[in-house]
View 1 (cartoon, helix red, strand yellow):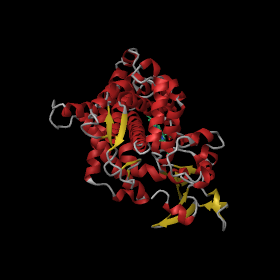
View 2: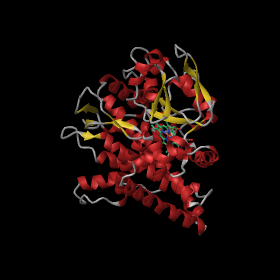
View 3: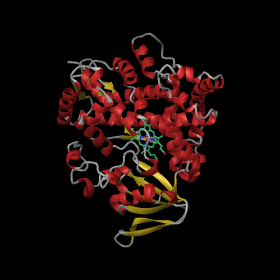
View 4: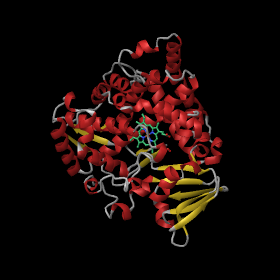
Length: 452
Ligand code: HEM
């Protein structure tokens, strides 16, 4: 789905659906052109605002121009290093996470589902100062403490999932997105909005009564309280948090799911990663050794993360729309090496997935998981546009460091808690499940995690 057509039609080609022309490309120079060099000729809103509006409103993901500049300026300071490195929050959630994993001698765990719960718990903690605690609910059920009723946090996480698959369908319907608006989608959107609005109205009340600074004095960073110092508009606050929930949850959860999917299939990489982790962080949990810097400096861990995102970029395919007549540098002429004219209103679809697997860029082993490739191909500016899991240009992902810190932390802690990981399922046919992001389909990531 993400790479087949390029093999047949070349790295840039056009297609037409119901009168709408889309240019599809996996050419780094073209991608650099519309994401950076000619940024102003292309917009995000025409392709995304309509399909995503019910949930995301006018949040950063779906708007352009001044509205986007405002949102980016509002959110950017919140990703300063001290905010994103509250590792004690991550440990709190990791402790519950591991309680949900059975010992490998008894059963396998579906890790991907658990990673999604871990990331929604930590994202809500970061945003609202209070986690929706889906893992806590799961653990209580496992320990027979509660019945299967879903408390509001877990109901929110479930509804959030439901919205993703509908928004995916709407996205591909492009201009016809309003044809897909079933009752389940509307109900799920309502649950998500109600959940978020509860926190927003609390914070607006705090701000009105002048108590916002008192709560932040406690030293614990809470995203919603921090941005409420700049605006108390409830719609702006709700849209900002909803957009960040979308950004922060599935992405990191999917990265971790694919990473363990790959590690159990490549035992040599698993063994090498274990040696690197033990050397840099110790075999047992020692909070003083896991820091933002030490996670960044553990080379093999970084290569494993980079290589996973190369093979399975969380956002495999993306879209822009030309807002004036313009060009792309490559794709025209008989050999596809000349510029191509792009009329106003055309869509541009770009597949990072296909680009990351091009043999002419990554070599004949482009489809193999080989973290060592990053040793000889360091990420330099010259190489930057061929590797784009976090996008590039003015709209580059704001949460990149947050995501890599959270994912790296989780991997280190997994290796400290468990002595080995084995796959329960070795189906050679990889099933991708796509909503707005991609994750492992089929049975998910069934892994036996052995303590000894
Ligand atoms: C592995 C994890 C992640 C990946 C692969 C990823 C990837 C991306 C990509 C590809 C975009 C560009 C979307 C577009 O312009 O169409 C993006 C944008 C964005 N990401 Fe991430 N992301 C990750 C995690 C996060 C996290 C954890 C956060 C925040 C908590 C975050 C916040 C954002 C925001 C706010 C934008 C919008 C930037 C803008 O439009 O100016 N991301 N991300």
